[in-house]
Image (cartoon, each protein chain N blue to C red):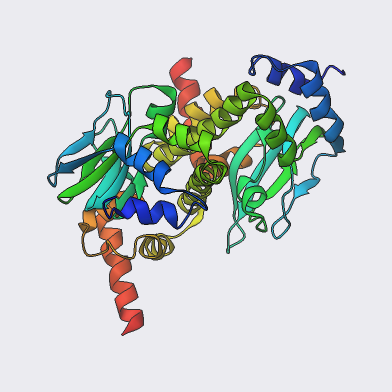
Length: 196
Length: 196
């Protein structure tokens, strides 16, 4: 078995996942490389995979009617990203998923996860936990968008994504926070003044 | 079996759910009545049930540090509401769930749903679908909060909750939309002018 980040991700989260299950999983996965700027999914396409980031950085975003970008989430190394809506309901995606750095991605078919869940109860619990955790994060984000100040949102971004601060352009961060780039500059300046 | 809304909800969604399973479920559920204004859950309590609304109207909301309310969701008759975070991760809730009308609620323990899912594959698929659908709605809401105008948000609210428009105070609707009550008045006035 190659030394994939996904192996560590699974063995550290799923009790009793054996080499046989892991081999089954990796046999069905394909490893793809994307150049920075390339798309994994674009609107109106059907998303058919979960993307596990072995290397690089992905971004999921939407473009509104006025042409403005809104970032839904980022996924650096060791994160799983997908358009669950499109995968689960077999509907065309409303989102872009783009590599914003040269990235290496394991493409996982949902069927493979389901098959593993059938065989291994611990994996089933883990899979369920991933779903529940996704719901937790989304609900938290809604609460932030409804109630937090620009500064609070930025501090939360740093906490959620400590490793990507220097890898993502500020304008892109602003589209994640739902604030204007000028507001983000102001927030960063205020925080710098506070800490100096 | 009593003629509960939940029975219709389940039999119309889960193929092959039999009376035995339904009896098992209802045996474990308790029916509770809440007066308008009463709380089902308050922050720092552990939420231990899913609440299925047989009659009435529930609201899930948070209060921020400045004392401002933010509505996460409403649940009228036939809707299921819970704080999944608190239930699944056994963590204290961050939210209020309040009856905003006199309400009759079936209190469902998560264990019962799990037991049913074990026995009935169709129920398992349905349960999974509920989770995926929840994710879909939350993601959609984030996109709305990031990108939609006040008018678009209000039109979406009407579409999501056609039956509760006249049952919820406008100030409460504004806390769901994430806009000031004055903005909501303006939006409603503009829409009324357009349609007249």
